Length: 132
Image (cartoon, rainbow, N blue to C red; front, side, top):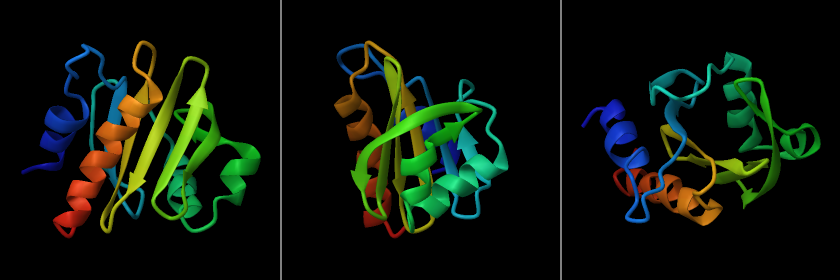
């Protein structure tokens, strides 16, 4: 299965409630974007690099915030080395690290944070189980 298929069919799929992620991407651990939705923000390489670095040391994100496409998200919680979650107005972001990739999903209302987390982290857990 291609990385784009994971974005299109798993991250951007509508939920039974009718809501879905606003945007999604899968990047390599080097920061290169492997696949993305058409709605994913135009990110700068240094934004992705900062996110990837934060999995080892989250102090910078906690202090300065997380940036995607120039938009600032306040880091609200996560799981050290595995998940970063952020909030911006009525929306937010969930970022999951696997052995080979980083999955990023953003959401806006009416989607709720737990729905976004379930989609992004669920696919991330599946990829980890597959050795990816």
